[in-house]
Length: 219
Ligand code: DX5
Ligand code: ZN
Image (cartoon, helix red, strand yellow):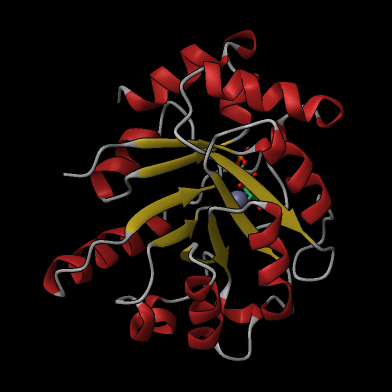
């Protein structure tokens, strides 16, 4: 049974204090930092790019779990790698050749993740499961924090877990979107071992990050 890890999404952080917010997450016991990159094209929102990630990485030794909600994505992979991403997660719909984009990430010695939107089926990535380090299951439609959890994706996690065991694979299963104290346990029981959370970690219990991370982990 893999250790449950928490990857707080800085999308819900105070963007005017991102460096300090990452320090708070580190002190609060986060296992990695979930960095949501959005281009206003693949998703209807625009956040940060390589220069900001590079600046943040200079002041943090945390693992940067970079979620690229950008399309086309292939030609930008190297820039995010150079900026300091440790895990680079892409959406299959954002690249013409998923296998070649995954190879690119691996050539750069980074961990490769693939993200499935709520409507995207596991079949889309069956042929790359043995090459990737992480599957990111979206439990909201990507683009914004603070959305409602979509419980229907739990079946997808259970199915993915079954395939992982059958094929004796070892990728992490990360769930992302609307995770809170009421659904974190069912997500873990379904098979997720990394929880992404933005709103719950930054806004619950008067923003007590340490308490919120512990509460999510303790389920
Ligand atoms: C949404 C992002 C998520 C989001 C999670 O497109 O990928 O990481 O920021 O935020 P919450 O936990 O607030 O749903
Ligand atoms: Zn995300």
